[in-house]
Image 1 (cartoon, one colour):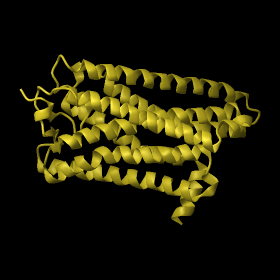
Image 2 (tube, one colour):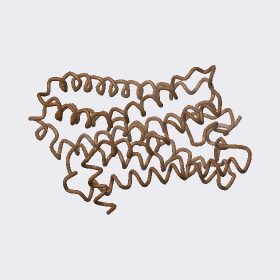
Image 3 (cartoon, one colour):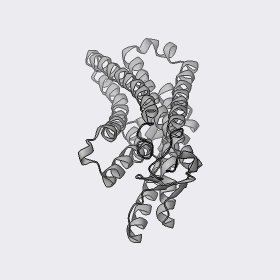
Image 4 (cartoon, helix red, strand yellow):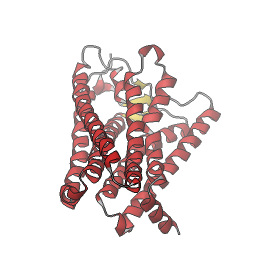
Length: 304
């Protein structure tokens, strides 16, 4: 019975059995990856180069673009390489690094989305105190807290997951090293340690979700009381992109975690993993740029 010390590599789920479908998956992932690189790269460049975008909202958006780039770069390039070269192997160290990076980035992204909801709340409900509550030092501290919380969460999960003995071989039924799939390889009496880590992380995520909901309850109560229709439209324009990103992020994660076992299958798990790990980093830049005149102006100026 092999354990974690005797496993030198893992075998990831192949996209398809036929060579033509493997190349098709490679082309699709390449297109999505290039779109994510282009969208997030343009946002990073525009925010960094245009001094009019040096505000708390765009500072947090810059951090979100960095996290999106890191998140999609953790999983997609290896999956594309496996499809292109018709391989499945990933080293034990590479799998551990992938788990750490993915948990770190996706956790930090959700914590940052929570901070961004606070930014929207202060801007709409307490505009006179915006400069005081969200000064440059406070913004840097909140962003650092989001990144630091994600780092600690990743350390906790990687230590819990890769300290488990593996008794069920080394075939991971996913296109990247997903914790839930690695747990299926562990001994049945030992993965409770990782379950405790998952419960701790779920508690933090639930607390952040409640904070986001309460922030938007206050925002939607304050917007109708604004004296001008123009101010109401501006407030909704500020909130809708963030709300869309949060909804996309939360809905895909919830479905991945709570889908009924009766409908679970490798192909469905594959699709769900693509929805929460690949699609949001590619869509987020376009969601934020659609209704943001300042960002669209800076992007047009940058391109022209």
